[in-house]
Structures are given as C-alpha cells and as structure tokens.
Length: 188
Image (tube, rainbow, N blue to C red; front, side):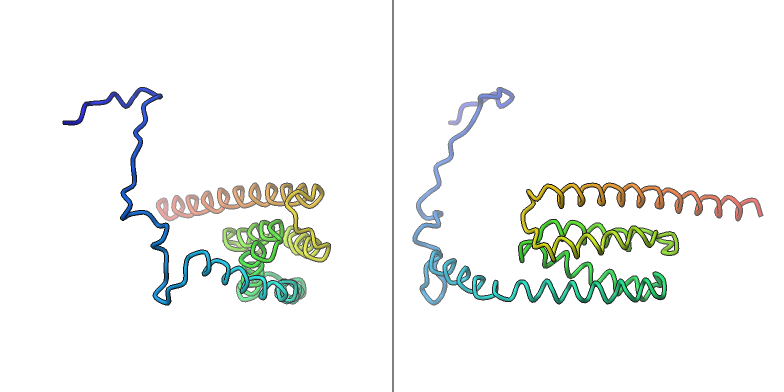
C-alpha cells in the first residue's frame, strides 16, 4: 500500500526507476541493424557535405530577395509583389538558422510579419521594407553568423522593435476603422 505524500511541499520529489525493457541503450537500432550513434554520425557527415552549399543557398535567396525588393520599389507593394517579397523573405527566414545566419532569420521573420499582418499594404512604409532588406543583405554579406555580433544584434533588436510597434498601431487602426464602418452601417 502506498503512503499518501503531501506534494505541496517544495522538497517533495519522487524517484522513478525505469525498467530495463524501456531503456533505449541497446534498443535503438534501425531495421538495418545500425546503432543510433552510427545513424547520427552518418547524418552529421551528410550535413557536413551539404554545408559546402550553404553560402550558395543563402546567396541565391538573397538574390531573390533583392529582385523582389527591386520590383516593389519600382511598382509599389501590390498584393502580387507583396507575396513575392514575402516568399523571398520567408525562404531566408527558414534557411538562415540552418546555414548559420540567425540574425538574418530574425530580420526576415520581422519582414514577413510586416507584409503579412498589415492589411492595407499602401500604409507599409517603403523605408521600413528597405531597412529590412538592407539589414538582411548586410548581415549575410558581412558573414555576421554569430548572434554575439554587437552591431548586428543591436540593429536587429531596434528594427524588430520598431516593426512590432508599427504593426500593433496598424492593427489597432484597422480594427478602429472596421468598428467605425459598422457603426456607420448601423446608423444608416
């Protein structure tokens, strides 16, 4: 019979012994008989082989971003061009961490949010889009791979803060406009 234990006591704890049949050691084998350590080593070797392409991949994504941004600068942030810019930024966001540019990924995420969350794209400041693209480009071109790069980190923090504040204001403005329209419709 188990004894009741007062669990509100912060020093309370329970030690659980894991039965041998549930332990992973010696059990983690594929159908081919490879051990977990062997499979991990093979995966790391494959990643190392792929890593020679990382700079090419991020540079290609950067080229796509620059092209999309050029079209936006020439024609404005139309719905089609916003989607093109979003995709280019989203590709960088997804790839950046893997290829060693976490700060570029954060800026790309911020740009994705700016494009996705502001309903009236005509209100998105071109300078804010420009700053995002320029920041991503600078981070990648300078090969600022480390999060500890002070200038890059400060830039990212300021840019993402300004963008978050802008998005919040725009969402509140859009909501207020919807309420005003509903009020007008109710009066009419």
